[in-house]
Length: 277
Image (cartoon, rainbow, N blue to C red):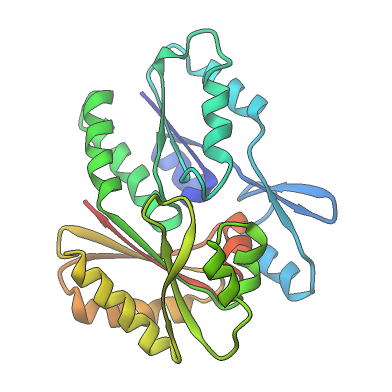
């Protein structure tokens, strides 16, 4: 069985090799030149470009590249895990690629309905289940349980990045012009857009709003809580320590965002995900 994901899952080339998976890079376009996540550009390099006033854009993996990967693995079951539909056009691309090959019946495309840390965990879980000898049907069933019990939050440092990526609800976009606020964003009920959970005056109160929401959703020791950041490791570590006070027995992870995801949240942003194991 071959497990494939796009680079929004935050797996580096080393982790890709160690876990025997294949990662399709999402693209970043800078001054008309295309770069692939983790292949041509690293997160720190993109942050440096942003600090110098460059305004890059993202590009999806080419359908042709995905078709080629599918064709190379047609003799075995393929599990393609994609960043959430609505959060990116990648899901539509990898689904379209499936319909272009001669024998698509062995290609199983899963909408993770999420990104970043939660996506990273879903890939990790798929690898563990595959290594345990589970069937493709069993793996998909277990992944769907985690997908249905996954919660995501964003504390942006610059609303304009989210506004440019076009994933905000209208009300969230309107809030982007307000000054001296710390918004907490979350996914809409259908998980296709990013909307306002609450608006606070301090980062401490914003994090308290996330903790309250996680408690209301029943997050406990059966969840993995991941904190993702865009060049803000110390902030991510402080966030984790505060979360640990309320969820002592949960499993915690810290990840740096991929270059393409940094363009969605902006430098300094923090993402918090809780996903059922």
